[in-house]
Image: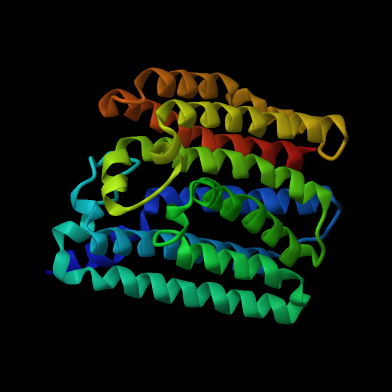
Length: 299
């Protein structure tokens, strides 16, 4: 019984996917250091805590909404898509996921209020946009092909990276904006490739994302364009001296990106064959921004 309680509360957090948060926080920190700012360790820890709470909140709310709609009972679950399966296994404890979502959202708001008092209202637009994505994503944003495609990348890219930079420095910068483009494209692609196994279940649930409107080939094309744009954003930033040459360290993952793209193109309709390439993209989404942050920090 105790294990079921813990599973219902902790499972919807999707702990393995939370690794993305420290990577994006590191990008904001690296941009601040590169621009010559002195970083307060307490402020960095608070920013990381708020970002982590935001990710947990959207994950738990997504699990709860997908359970309530019946979507979780129709998906072909993989290690990277289709939900965790925790709530269907413990239906009488599904409300735990909602409690976790609301509690962590309150933490996000509390951290935001602290930084508004510290830095002023300049952080408010990012904070409001982040809260709206958390609350609206599953039930409403997934009904719009464009918003469903971009909202996750915007959340982890511009909102999180620029937000961390601002609370550490009190200003915005071109450096932070440029480094935020990499997770913008990588994370959007992560959600896109993870939607391939769930197409029919998503259609049943009334979702209206890119794959359902324009089909798999269009999804593969957008995936490839976003991969290309992610790496080009770094090259452009280095060419125009917004980022140091060591930022090109992030290009080391291009061979893995090529494998993931080729795998998606070949196996978009075969879930078992696609799973290894979904794993490749998870690795890309973590390693590429991390290498960019390390390259900037080393410089």
